[in-house]
View (spheres, rainbow, N blue to C red):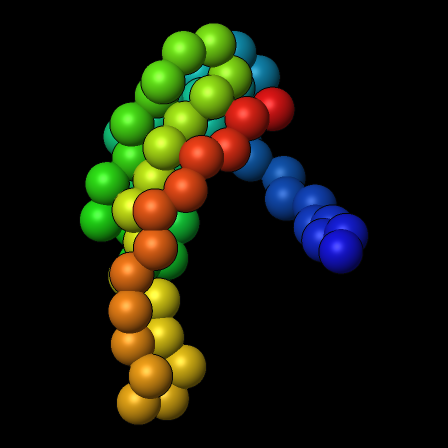
Length: 65
């Protein structure tokens, strides 16, 4: 899967990158995110509340760049 979008942010480049790389800000950007913890360099663990119609649940996973 490949997702692509473009946005023009009216802010200095350094400020944008530091904000996007802040785990607290990332957690706010992820729909259903209940917990988001950095585990080390470029590795994170997240707990997400997910659902489709009446089917609901939560999942926990790791991601790295």
